[in-house]
Length: 124
Image 1 (cartoon, helix red, strand yellow):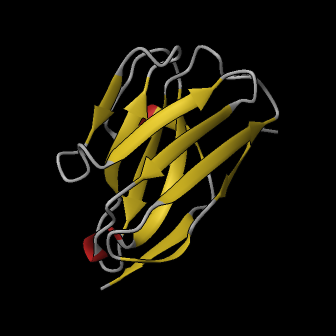
Image 2 (tube, one colour):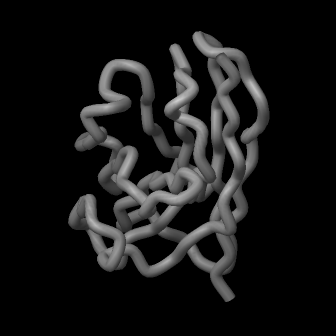
């Protein structure tokens, strides 16, 4: 059974940094794209960042470009999200996801596996 477990959420002041990690178990995902999405209270879940199987291609939402960095370690079956210069509007539950193939999509329905989410709260 595939499980994704996220770590690293918490409370941080505006301008601070956090690093999220997401470890997958149950099978390896060396050839699958991986991504992060987020959902703020009362809002739809939105795309944050995605990375190809070898890390060679990355995509970011405009709202986080230049502040967030996605990376992965295939040996550990883990994807990371380094978040710098955090803003109160980054407050959300962050979800990691694994795509069904090597394509690097930005839309949710192309991701088959999801973590349970980790809360990130940025105070002003």
